[in-house]
Length: 42
Image 1 (cartoon, rainbow, N blue to C red):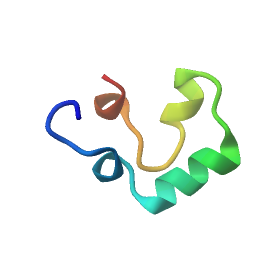
Image 2 (image 1 turned 135 degrees about the vertical axis):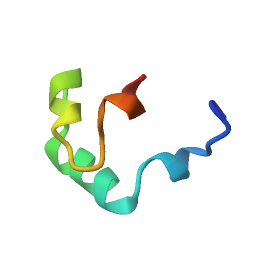
Image 3 (image 1 turned 90 degrees about the horizontal axis):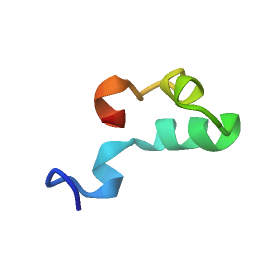
């Protein structure tokens, strides 16, 4: 548990589903997923 957050508190179901469907391979592709931003990728 990093930064005091549990994994399921970092991304919601919609974001997780979009990640599975889009299968981002780069940081730039991951940032394009709804619900993900630079702050979450630190």
